[in-house]
Image (cartoon, rainbow, N blue to C red; front, side):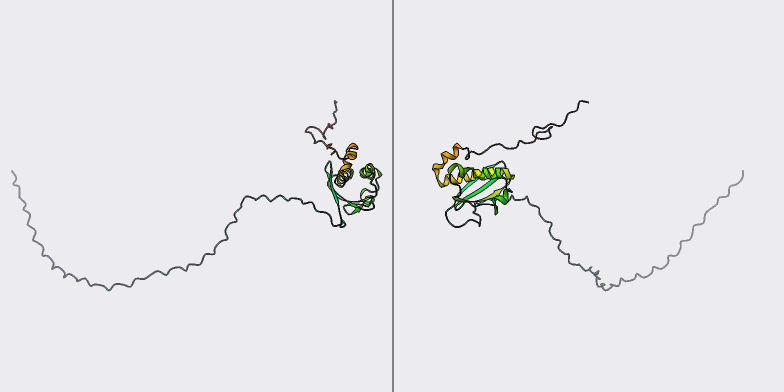
Length: 204
């Protein structure tokens, strides 16, 4: 049998430890001065104008029309009457005089352009009471057409004569001069051309 050679490991020699380096003493460093970052310049903010506040519209007070006599009226006693017809309104003042008539600052012939029928309508209250040529008429006319205004003047004169003398009411009422004419233009109806006029119908 072959002899086995025992191999013996040599014990490693202990390594010599290097001498420890002397510990450095910590040197207390002087505290560094704190460096503050430069603050950015703050610009003043311009105040923006406040947005307008929209409030609900306040309804305007209704204007009350005050009856005022026109400047053309002479001084002295006056008798007032209001007349209406369709959309026309006449404010009439009677002043004792010679029968002169003024409508919105114009004479009878200038305002009604010499239309005899309208002049006859206006003079009816004076003819019925036999007072023609004894009073001057001053009237303020509003709205409506010229024929409607003539009817309104007639009614205003009749009412002013009743204020002058209540005994004339019977005569004027018998003539129908104190009755308000209620006839008005009808409103347009849908599906029609006017109040009653229909569109032309063609069968073929």
